[in-house]
Length: 145
Image 1 (tube, rainbow, N blue to C red):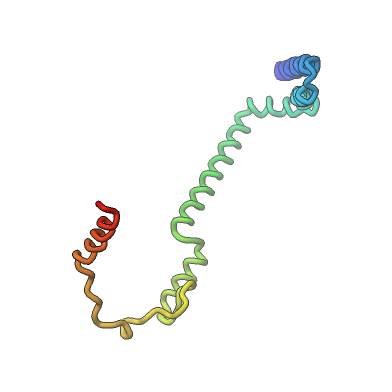
Image 2 (cartoon, rainbow, N blue to C red; image 1 turned 135 degrees about the vertical axis):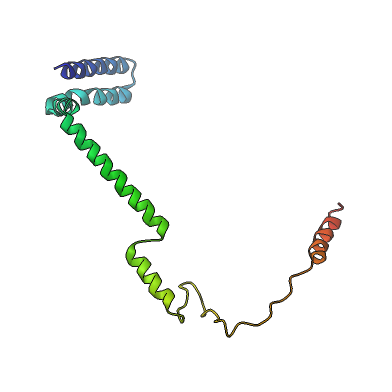
């Protein structure tokens, strides 16, 4: 009963503001205010306000909202864990099977990777520190620093 009265008062006040806005020759804004002010009375007339009032004071309804919230949290948690692990169970099994076969090629690779036997035995020696600094010195001298 109180909710219906409040909604009626809000609609009446909104229509009053719309009339004042139209009087100031701002017709587009007046029509928009009138549309917004008719929403509360429309909700009362359709019974939505009564349903919301009954739901707001019902412990069963609040328990239901709690269960829905818990379900949402569990769903989002499982999605986050699934993303961290790298996909669904089906995708992980396929990746494990592909890793077991030594002749597989990476999806984005253009040529098969080298096996241990075909790799060169020695690695090239890393560049000395003097070579690195000579490049920097040349750049600094070029700029007069």
